Length: 199
Picture (cartoon, rainbow, N blue to C red):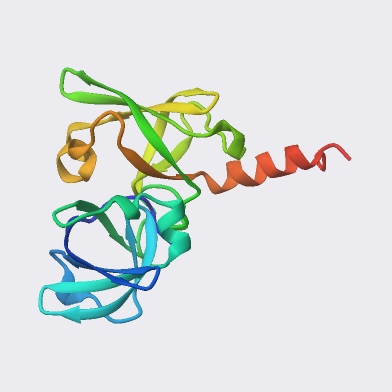
């Protein structure tokens, strides 16, 4: 489990193909603190550390992960938001994030608002996922508050700190981002769609 509070930016150093899988080698400020089999969120996608070599570590993305996330677009030099799993004796500063990407969206607009940034993201409304104003959503592993919610799109306001210390500053209109919708909202939407509520 994660909180959506990004700890550090990692950098893709090398990508190796193994069948349909991709082994991604990254560098990170806390590589020396990692261990084999540890779960680590990469742009909000939970991946397992399978190798450590000096200041670099390796994770493997299988075909299903590549299809459902933006990992297939990574290349050498890509900056990745990183978060280690939550410690049970720590504070939950963001919201409950599973590290299971629901779908991807596309950045459709970016607006500089005198220091803060307003970003609009569109996604396939047919997926059944929804957002609500002032609700939570995870974008590339970052816990954010929904500023505007529409059918198949939402907007978020990014504070200067988040802009500087995550890969948000590297985004452009048209870029694909990983989305994880609020877990409680997903259950409510599922119940409503099934007709179970009110029976």
